[in-house]
Image (cartoon, rainbow, N blue to C red; front, side):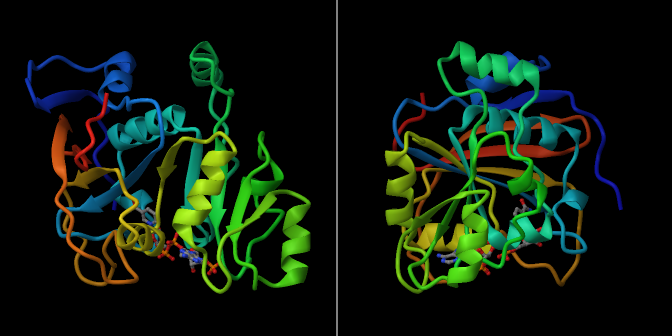
Length: 256
Ligand SMILES: NC(=O)c1ccc[n+]([C@@H]2O[C@H](COP(=O)([O-])OP(=O)(O)OC[C@H]3O[C@@H](n4cnc5c(N)ncnc54)[C@H](OP(=O)(O)O)[C@@H]3O)[C@@H](O)[C@H]2O)c1
């Protein structure tokens, strides 16, 4: 199965004018005010699937990938659960030259920092996400994490401990922010997102809806502990020529 292919993106709400958006438009459309901010980014099918054959690739498109890349460029740190890192075989987080220069013009480090959440530390230090990283990644883990695995990972990443048996995510995020990473982008997956939702830590959700019926089997974008219902505000709807929708929701605090 392949997704839609066009990358022409238009604003559908608010104020649709029919114009095709360039990168500068997208950057201003996704800008957030300075200060701590946790944004999650997911893609789903119209029937709510988080994956096709175990990966998100089958749900994505050129337009979705364009937004995905812009959001990476705008973040200080990229937070990802170990399940997604393993399943999606994350490569090194490395922005291209144009995006590095854009960040440096904003007075930011050229590359964002990868932050991986794992209790088991069942992570491969030779995976490209660690071994080829232009900036040393951070692994958020627990005090009870296996010592030998921790030692091996410490060769390629900075280990930050938050919590004893499971990662205390609010505490972990505080530590990440104390290292200078205020604007955090979470790329999932469902267990990490569900746990952050339960902690009421999510400020924003960027959700791409792909015009596909994926059928039964796959999970939703969220999993894990139950949480109180939170109302989100729809801030922006973008679309491409193939019916892909890029939705931006925030909690009460106003984005820039
Ligand atoms: N459609 C999309 O946009 C999208 C985005 C991301 C992922 N996905 C899909 O989601 C699936 C992966 O789902 P998943 O739920 O396994 O992903 P996940 O949330 O990325 O990973 C779960 C793992 O993260 C670690 N973790 C998360 N919260 C933790 C906490 N509070 N304390 C300790 N460890 C914690 C644990 O790692 P350890 O096991 O190492 O302890 C846990 O097993 C894949 O099929 C992927 O393709 C889709």
